[in-house]
Length: 430
Image (cartoon, rainbow, N blue to C red):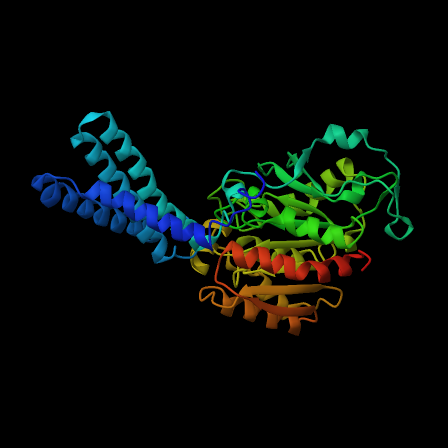
């Protein structure tokens, strides 16, 4: 979409514009020349909104527990604003007269609802631009068949030379990675393939397995995480060379929380250690099969998962980047986690929990980065604690804070910040 598609919808003049048109929408929905509407309908809509918001908060946080940490209060408030816009739009549409009034009411309702939804988005920065809101990840797609048609010759990265003709940007492959060994039912992965992979011969490249949060999906890294922009920018500075990035599904569903372990909730650890590697070896000829050239990274739940892979399988994932990860894998509390996922066996939980492992094992060949938002009140202390534990366990680790809280603004910036270190560690020439 060009310049329009690149417009930020989380800062600058667009959010201000959303405020203005949203308030205008609410003004139309509230101001109606009938006293009964003003003194009965509008207060009733507000009351219903408050009741529904309180009930939603109670059900989600006290009964359902779909997420281990509480949803920010601001999300409930702005969700209530969107609901109020919907209720008022329905009421105003019913009492309105004539096609013009009803049409204006529909438009006003959309604007009022958008005010609430836009602020929920700004809480997480999940869709930072117009393009991402429309699902445009900023890259051409490529199929496995098209990859098969590319020259199969692959050379070591230190023997590869940039040809005179090479794509200027990377491409995205959408691929179903079957859980052959694990039985895990994963959603399709998104794979970033750098420009150099489309040359002949192609260089043998390291691999980064990247994971989203919970709730989440592989698409999150391409949209809110702005992965393509980050990788293309790095490629442009390194003659088209970057790691291959496999954004793998580590939850199975949008709301799933299988804890990145092998348990009654699913064999996620086996999927990420065995199935993903086997698929890459079979389908990505340029992917390095030497596991010292593989790394794990992720955001929030995915960051926790990256540390789990690094501590449980250091020979397979000796390098990791934990961005805003949890102190330990959790379903809300340690006891609930042990009861639900490990059948009440606390020893089984401790046997795979990074914090427990790092007190009893040494990791002299492992290296990692811990990144967190400087205003992330929920996760900052935990990230610092896991960093200190990793350092004491003999890992070559570093800790970094970036501006922001628990949002994609932090996660995209954090991965972008650590990519040069990560690429160097994996063997990409500087």
